[in-house]
Length: 194
Image 1 (cartoon, rainbow, N blue to C red):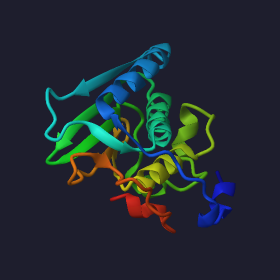
Image 2: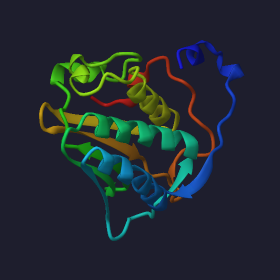
Image 3: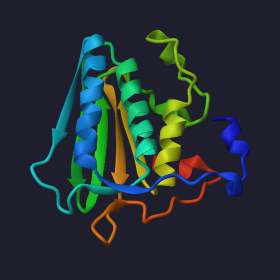
């Protein structure tokens, strides 16, 4: 990952942008993570609405979006000793929102501005697990930014963390990118509204 930042934009290989149904995509993600959560004595819930204002069709790179969600779910499991994890798909006005919420150790308010810095790890992260390199949230933010998505995080120490990924509504009834990926930003924080 660190080496990837040294590549010039002309050398970046294009990703595959395709249209897919986020509702069924998240169902599969939930079914993949359910046994992992059970192994850690956790319960993962998949919550949806009965209907969606503009449907659940998304345009983007499925592999990258999967990586973003897997990184967030892996962290939710990793930093939750007991309790629940929630994977939600909902509408907020016209936008489509994915929420990943846990009942884990939470993130201190003064550390929230650091969590997307590559290789940064919270001083409290060693309390539960020593594994990880501090790249998961950075990668998730990069994927969100490349797709023109917003990512928000709310956290309370000893109560849990909620990540919200906002897919803005497009005029053509499809969420996500418009057929091309957005250019890299010099500041990854541009995609984060803290």
